[in-house]
Amino acid sequence: MHFKEALIQSKDNKNIFYLAPIPVWVEVFDDDSLHDRVYDLGMKKLNDSQKQMGQELPNQIDTERINSYKVNYKRRENWIEPNEYSPIGSRFFTPPNNFLDIENEDVITIRNRINNSYKKLLSYLEIKNNQSPKITESWMQYYDPHSGRGHNAHNHCRWEPGEETPTSFSGGYYISDGQPILDHPYSGVFSFHIRGAAHFIRPKKGMLIIWPFDIVHSVKPFYGKSNRVVINFNIEDSESKLI
Image (tube, rainbow, N blue to C red):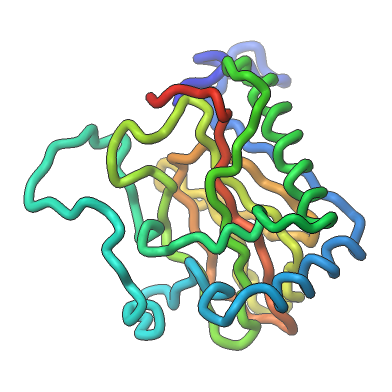
């Protein structure tokens, strides 16, 4: 994915430039009562399996998950694809629960916030689009406070190269941080993996993050006082053409 400029000058040194920096949108909404209502709605609407979609027990076989695996892509014996677009991780073993499709006033508010932030991001990056966002799939997840579930490093590249569009982004909207235990500095933290380094972000209630679909990211095992709840999604411009 290509962005606004090849080099962006630093603010404090005329000879320092950032090479192809990766744009990430971060915004925090502070209306807690709305997030509490959405938390309760998800508890009622989703079954136990849907609440765990996409979660893993890092670095070990997750027997609960592996028993539900279904091959939902074209499985071939040999093939060729561009390496830079290879998918990482097991995202496509994870069917979406599409929580953001629910016609509920609070869910619509969150959906509008995501769409508006996405449009602002594309405008800032000067990426051609028709200002008509489409959330293609979404996953609302409840991370149990005691089981230590997280998500191994993965990106949102498709199994079939070329399915992405120039406006394809992914994101997460946090409904609850789950009050992670204080003596575990990595509990439930979100991480981008870029050039051999992990860039950690501690989730906050009401935080929205949007990033390019091909960036590798993960979630550290979560331990806390209550459920860590996030709505993950993929979004693109509805008029955008495939790459």
